[in-house]
Image (cartoon, rainbow, N blue to C red; front, side):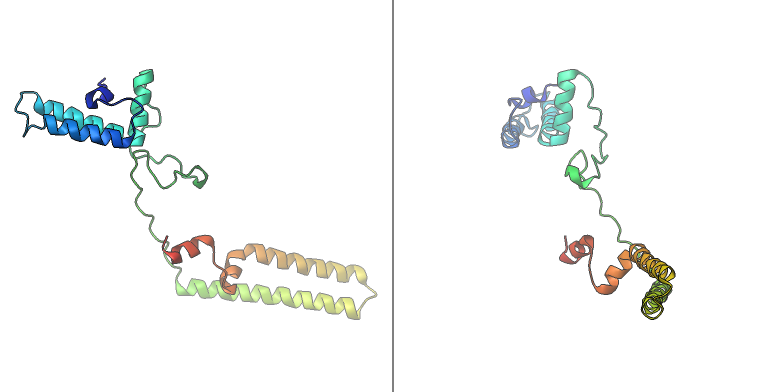
Length: 189
């Protein structure tokens, strides 16, 4: 395997700027238009290959690992995403440094589907609100049968909680709250 550091004449711990400087210097000296030697084209190709590998952090890491161990870097499939989990900070990059294509925007729901969801939400919310009001009325007016009144109020409160968790996203939209992704989309991020 070729030693790219030796081809460019840089140390193994050289930074990107040093590599770029060494590449320009070497490329000018062995370019086929300048150097008329028989192996000038081959030298120029190997310098380009060394530069492309060492200037890209992912390719350089893979190359260094292979040079040290003799084993190819295990997760060096070109174009495969590193990790989609945002906690790792690499969800928006591929291993070779390219950005993935943008995800298509979700299709908006048809009008009838939105109206049906709204109607169902209002209907269920109305029934639950009515049951809460009736349970409270019964507790106030008919205080003799406390067990049934408390059970009715508990069921009404339980239904309210279930409605909230079932339609949490819809309630937030109805009240005008926006999720973080919606705020980011509006901000143009």
